[in-house]
Length: 428
Image (cartoon, rainbow, N blue to C red; front, side, top):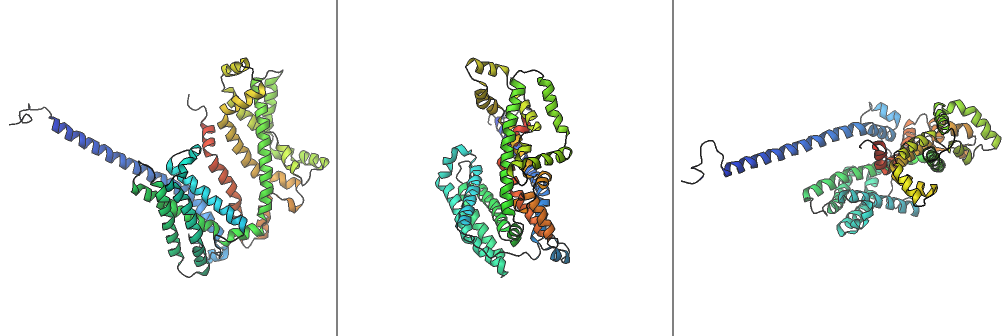
């Protein structure tokens, strides 16, 4: 008879305890797996709810309105006009631009897959990562031509070519995703397949339909977008600089009636643009700034909102830091550039995004001081596109989506700074 058999009644042997522990671990692991699956399922549903309106907008941009209505408004594009183009269509500049864009996107995806920041860019030079980046670009360059040709000719082989492109791109990306010690081959393959489906699908929808090109050319969106970009950049830089200087003065400098002046400064937020529009337009006319860049930019060179936001960030800087830098001989400019701005970078970045979006979407003020159609900004040109294509409303939707691309890029590029700015000071 063994020792375990002679154990007193009501006691638990080591074997039994080990068995119970294994069962508990198995239950915990299964519960954790089910929990993660449920969380990802909820995220997928929420992502679909957020992206569904964008998908319907793209469908309405691709479909001619009359054909769309005659077909009973189905939830898929109707009679889409596809361009017969290849990777090398459009000239040398276009080829180089689209190649660099795809390389940058694939490098960004591989960076996310590697879980490394941009400062560790040498991780992208590993052989597997290079195969994913360069191989994915070459695969798109070679296979998108037959895809667009098949879609244009409607030969019935479009789905096959799209699937082939997705499979090849998925294989190249899976090689890069698998270049991580703690990642299984199955996870890398699934990640590569998911990315390839999304990437190739977006590439086909963003380049193949003729609606984008027609809206771009008929609405003259290129020059208008360039003027809006210049206006938005100048306004953003002016507002950030003036807000930094004003906020620094209100926090770190001492002068008479500082609180009263700050209250008067904030009171300007109560005055909408419509209240001061007539007087400002009259002033611009007297200065001879009609149809000029300075007329678009200088009235918005300062922002009370930006001063308030950055001032709140500066107030969170401990006074000990200011005293220590003063003892070390730092002046106001040195303290502002080397300490105040770096310590409040999330707030400054958040206001930069807000300022850029407001400047980009301006319509009323440019419409008031622009009289020559050759210098229209993007928002005015979109309005012109609507009035000139009443029977082709899908072109106006396509033009609006094209105009939203820079906004989406800014939001994606600065999403981390926006989140940090919104949550700054939330955790003590």
